[in-house]
Image (tube, rainbow, N blue to C red; front, top):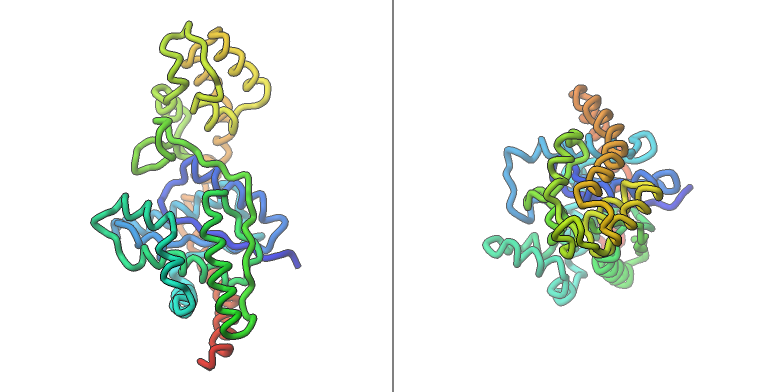
Length: 326
C-alpha cells in the first residue's frame, strides 16, 4: 500500500488561482502515488471572524472546486473536518503534551493576531494542536506543504514525538512533502492573493471577467510607458501568472518584449489571458456541471466522512488505550 498523505484547506468558497496553484493542483498530482485524505477544515475556519450564514455555501463551493480541479473522489478521501468528531477529541488529548512555549513561537499566531487584534482567541493559539491531530488521526507519513508551512510540520513532529515518549509509539511522525506549491501574489502585486483583499482571480471567472481583472494588474514598476524596457523577473504578472499559465513560446515572447520594450504591458496581458483561459476553461465547465447536481457533492462528502471516521476512530482508540483511558 502507498504511504498515507493528509492535507487540509479552509472553506473560503470559490477557489482562486492562488489556492489552485498553491495546494489543490498538487493534491490532484499526488493522489496517484499516495493514499490521500483531503479535508475541508471548517473548525480551523472559526478561529478567525466568519459569517455563520455563509459557512455551508462556502464548504460546498470549496468541495465542488476541489473536484473540478482534478481531485478524484474515487482515488482520494474528501471530507469535512467537523463531520469527524475524533479531530477535536484527539486535539484535546495532544494539548496535554504540547509545551506552551512551542505555541507562543508560531509565526501564524502572530500574523493572525495582527490581522484580527479584536479576536485573539484561545482556538487561534491552539490551532497548531488541532492541525497536529488532523494529521495524526490518519497516521499520515506525508503532508504536502510549501516551505512557509514547515514550522507547522515540525511542531506536529515534536508533539507526536513527546506523546510517543510519554506513552507508547502509537502515532506516526509525519514528514513534510515539499511540493512545488507557489505563493501567488494578488493582482495588486503587493499582497498574497485573497478574496478579502479583492485581488484575486477565481477558477470559475468567465473569460471576460478574467481579462477585466488583468487589465489593472501590477506589472514591472519600471514600465511607466510602453517604450520603457523592464525586467520580467520584477513583474508580478510574469512571475505569478505567465510562469504558470503560458507555454515556453509565449514566455519567450514576453521576456523579449519586456526587456526590449517591443510590446506593451497590455499586449503581455492579452497573451496571458489566452493561456489562462485555455487552462481554466475545462475546470469551469466541470464546476458548472457538478454544481447542477445538488446531491453529488453531499454524497461524496458523506462517504468521505464515513471512510475517514473508520480510520480516525481506530487511531483514537489506540491512543486512549495507551494512556489508560480505555
